Length: 145
Image (cartoon, rainbow, N blue to C red; front, top):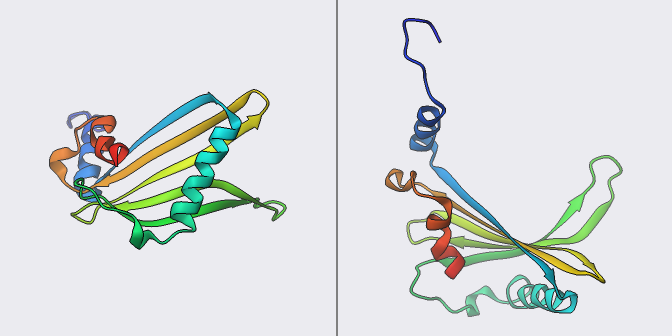
């Protein structure tokens, strides 16, 4: 910054960026030492009901958040081209105002010591008046859904 100009803070840069492009809120929750059979059953339930099921039969609620897609993702190694399936389940949502959101479930460590379920909550927020909120506050309605 030139000496005759005021310093620009990171907060100023981020706030300006959010005003122009919107903000993505994100939280990750880890549930460790979960009984492996129960963790696998939970993933199977999500897979059967949402990924392989008919989303039109999913009941709505008062939140105004609609489930619009569900998918299972795989990882393809860019070096050797090998593909690993069942890497996680993604539930895609849409808020009444059209803003997208998603919940991702990943399962790891399903050995004899239990499993870890990782749940990622992500939401795009276009409304500038909400950009200063804490992520858990902005993601609560999605988590409750």
